[in-house]
Amino acid sequence: MFPDDLRYTREHEWVRIEDDQATVGITEYAQDELGDIVYVELPKAGEKFAQMETFAVIESVKAVSDLYCPLSGEILAANDELVASPELANESPYADGWMIRIRPASLEEVENLMTAAEYEALVSGLRT
Amino acid sequence: MSALLKTPLYHAHVEVGARMAEFAGWDMPVQYAGLMEEHHAVRNSVAVFDVSHMGEIAVTGKDAVPFLQNVVTTNVGRLRQGRSQYTLICNERGGVIEDAILYHHDGYLLVVNAGNKQAVWEWLSGVAARFEVDLLDRSDEYALLAVQGPEAERSLQPLCDLDLQRLRRSRVRPAVLAGRGVLVARTGYTGEDGFEIFMAAYDAPRIWDGLMDANIPPAGLGARNTLRLEAGMALHGNELSPEINPFEASLERFVDMEKGEFVGRESLVDVAADGPDRLLYGFRMRGRAIPRDGYGIKAASGQGMVTSGSYSPTLQVGIAMGFLPGSLRRGDDVMIEIRGRDHEAEIVDLPFYRRENERRPGAR
Image 1 (cartoon, rainbow over the protein chains, first blue to last red):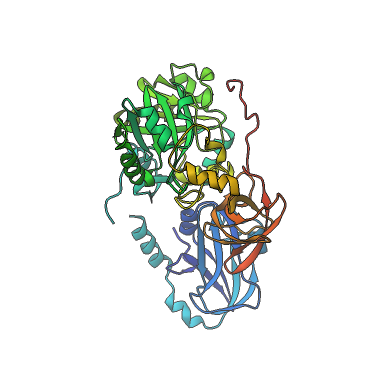
Image 2: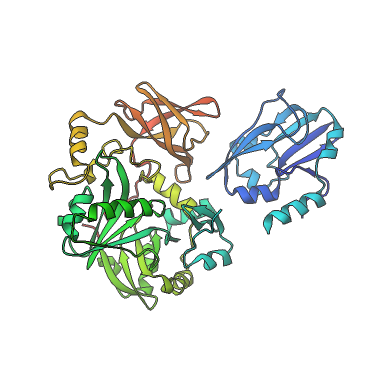
């Protein structure tokens, strides 16, 4: 039920690696748990983050959550449409609801991330 | 963690997939279909809340009225049979131990916050020693449902033998609802028209099913909080506490200085004469960032803290309440610190939201 072409963090972010760029967002499970997302605070292009460093804040009506950067790297772009319409993260977490594009510092860090099957196992453990 | 308390409707909530969370020692439904949807249902049509976690303390005995007059800030002598009033219980310093609804039906029933029930019980018991009065904690016997929204009357009427159109605001009457005896009051905590229904705990599942069959959707404590915040209603522990007096919280209309002696009166006379040191204000963000409980506020007159802050589903912007020293006016600028950065907000009148047609045909 989670896309096979993505890698996942324990904190429910996904990353899609295409050539020398990576796109980051939150998972279907995360958006469902958060509920109605009403505010997103994203970094600016040029900022740099280490793997699993806090890079953004996402808020539902009720709660504030930090987002963790799946890979070390430099921000290439942030999704301005998401900032204007935070509900995109609920409606389309893997496409229109993407958060940031980064240039990964090292693709070796991918080994620290979960595959879809591993993430699915994590989530099914959380649901019981 | 010790076992959480469950309302008689716990299984009904779990069965429909409600998201449950701890609140004041209770395992309560926070949301069902979604907070936003539930919030809009109450503003635009109707929804029902299980608020059986609230405490009910019955006050009976020869001295019930003099006791209550001594322990609350409103004039209980004027509370006629079949009516209710919002009231405050203060300590000697004038700080608010609890805000409650006092119902007068046969005897008197104080409905108090779940988290404060024990403290209120102990306080009342202490004062009661000087009176011929019996206190009875009936919280376990009662379930309490709140049916709220502009369609509340129309939705509830087919299930109820009482002519609800004639039940005016804050009135309470016995009725038969879904075949069971209940007490129906036209009260609520959402800023909308609506009813609060007291019933025997063992009747709650059947009545709940009746409401579900009547297509009244359930709403959770998440929406209850955003609704009451928009309506500018205080939440004890946030806008009220034993360290906050009613004048600071702009609740002086619920303090009757003329009714005679009551606990806290002497201190409150001083506050009334000198004016409160700080006041509760409403804030509306100018940008998109959302103020949350505990965030710092800076104003020209001094500093304060957000007591309740959230995204407002109705106004679609961040709103907050909080205390600030000095006298500020509508439109004045303040800064609210969010994650280390100051964000602009302005002072707005409370409540943030007021329903249209506040006085219904049934209202006085």
